[in-house]
Length: 315
Image (tube, rainbow, N blue to C red):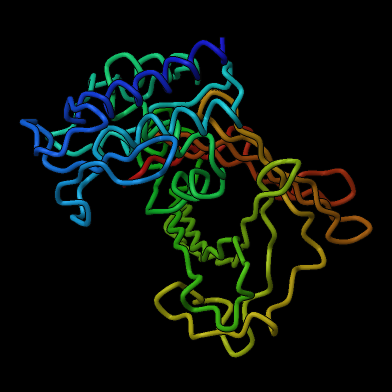
């Protein structure tokens, strides 16, 4: 299957190139009639130029780039890999691009995207393949950053007479505030501002996380709030520039590991804060919501947490 699609890509590229070239014999010198805006023809054996027009003019490669995308994907991707077509991808498509208007939220395989790319030159498929087969850190961070709250869930709990917190999450990338990052640094530092309100009482729980991509999946590390910051009011807006070499990883928090399946990220960790105190974190991220389960146990007895995960919707 890969061989067939690779041949299709090369044949399409060749046909485009031939269509743009003027029809001329090897000995011809007269400028031919052609619809091509620019061309450059050489003798394949000698390498000598035969004809050219606007040879140094910079021209947009247009859909020929899609063929290179297809060839690259065929070399490195699994045809059965599933990639979710998101609103973020849809918004990136230029209004004048060739597009099938794929349904956002639907999951397609790499094979399906390739067929749509090579047969109808679908721009959305090109974007999905380019981003979906590359690194996953940006996709993960895009889902978890922003402003979220659980108002819908909170209102439902209130109507049912259940005690449940109103919660807000504000997650912001802060790499620009971290000085002296290594040149090959590919991780994302994120300030998490969490606010919880129960029975009229509100408290904040800020954190600094580092998100990286490793062989096992996406890994989230917790860092201590930088020196000089007020831990009770720490936020992205209040954060001062901090030196990377002076940041300290949390020794208590076990890094959380996440995996993606059908466009949904899920994972977490269990941390032993002390011989008797255990913290459990489990999260699920998608385009539509964040589901967060947190609990603290002392000697096996839950002292913090809820039976149902907090379900955050993007504000």
